Length: 349
Image (spheres, rainbow, N blue to C red):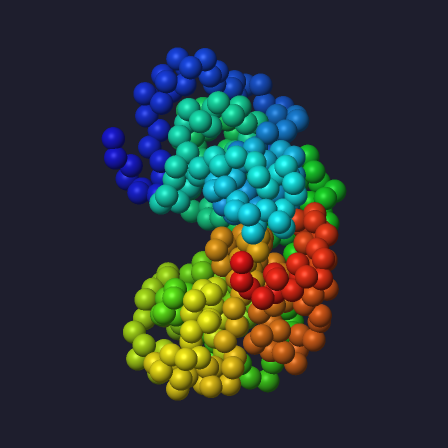
């Protein structure tokens, strides 16, 4: 059987038979304790007590970790040692589960059932493709599956919904308020800028991958009101020729690639670019998760302050060390030493 959507896992009748043969009981949907409307407008029946949650992909895992770490069953990908340093002991090192969403989906139905989750959460797009996946998994397993709108501008509403789903409404309100206040503040600041510099988002060791307008990879720029050089073209993540970069001649370059950040100054192809000549090439923080992209989750919230300070330094005078320390304490629930803060802001692992 081939799925008509390549990013969706195909759930076969054989999977259900294997699960039954292994003694894995499908939850009875009739036993749901309450009904919650998710971001796609679906009514999802959930138990009165939600204690075990399966994250469908990386953004969902981070959302869950920040709100209800005890309920997080594991991670789509095992966290590495540099990442574990900035996560709660006993939570950051929970097992690798694979993922239900994305082109690299690796979780199978038998594995999901064996974990006996009370709920499956996905955070990201609420397009019909993902609605179909949620409905299929939910109908074939009996496990409620809720979709959360993962757009940056919807973060506050997402936390409110996740709080309702998990019964953690008080903490959810605190995190939602931080997200709402941060987005409002950075947008107001950017709107005050008398002019916008030309900003380029560079990915890959050669710096030639970038996001076009509407791409999830550059959502943080667009959510803030920063007009990146690729905004005039609609699309996703693309590779552009060096000639196009030279035509754009960005005045600020933001990258997540350490190799590119380390070598760009000495690269003769890039020497004529304004951002390189003026030393305005900035490597984004990435521990334990990226601040600009990768994955596109709530981990980008401190990146709003960081990006503002790099593009509009006069409008964002806040101390990034303080913002980092406060965010990690509130969202990741860890206290950082000054040395750890410095390592995070350096953007290297």
